Length: 487
Image (tube, rainbow, N blue to C red; front, side, top):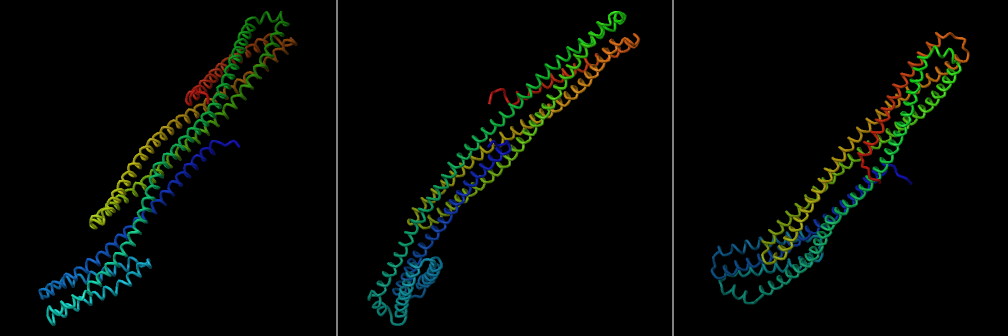
């Protein structure tokens, strides 16, 4: 199936939209996976931090208890009260954070009675110290009941942290996979799309140029034929004018050489008929040239519309690149926040700080890649603008060609009318010569009319020759606009 120019251009746009849609879908999916994994990892770090807060706050309550047991002043109970409230808050946060994890929920269910027992043991010693003195409280402490409860609490918290660390490793793997896929899509997908579009554009331009060159070649050939024909007609018209002038000068001799005048009149009639046939052929050729010029004009307008649509799609590509750049900036901000949280976490967060730095580096690379793509897109838009300008110039040249071709057709029409008039006059001369019934005055008047008609024929033929020359030059100029190389 042979595709039209509009179909080829439409296929090019469809291919570009398909590639952009695929790249956008893959980038969106990878970025979404990256964001979800990053959120899960951040939530896991918060769970670990809350487990540590529970243990740290319990240590604060023990510190307050020991201080009060030794000194016996209520001011030493402040760490105890503060730590107890902090433990309750941390446990509440843990319940909220792991509400979708049955394993961690069971661990918290086992941890709650242990913490309650620890609080009861601490309160018992404090009450004994307040009521009976330090020895009674010391006896309870020496039973190691509080230490055993604290060891169980530490073990439960360690188990919870280990489970969260396992989840953290899983989230880290998903984050790294999503980041690699996103970078692969940007680094390889966009250049591949540009290469495909450039190759398709080159092939499309080459095909259109070949079709235009064939049309222009046909136009030049027709113009050359018209020029040759009009030159012949001009030569014949000049000869006819010369013959008519000689006939007018020797009208007295025509009286004695009627036979010779009859032969010359028949020759003039035959020549005029041939000239009429040639002019009709030239007129049909000019009509064909006008149709060819209209076809070229339609193709040039289609090219201009296609290039304008390509410029609009380039703007859409620019908007997609801006979106990718925004995602890179968000990833950079997320990496900075993650680095801050890692710093707060101390030694535990050092590994996460390294991951956050890698994410930030990847975000910077993404921004640099989008900047390079934006530069390439700018070059494409500049080339598109230049193509639009060249197409407009070609369209103007084609319009001028159409106008000149129409003028040529009108000139040839006038030529055909003049040649027909000459043929009719020559026929009348032949009939007059044969009859010799009409007076010589009428013969002189008829010859004068013939002379005037011949002069008009010469002038009209010269005009047709000039118009044909202009049409030929127009074909050469159009050929120069698209290049003289063979497709």
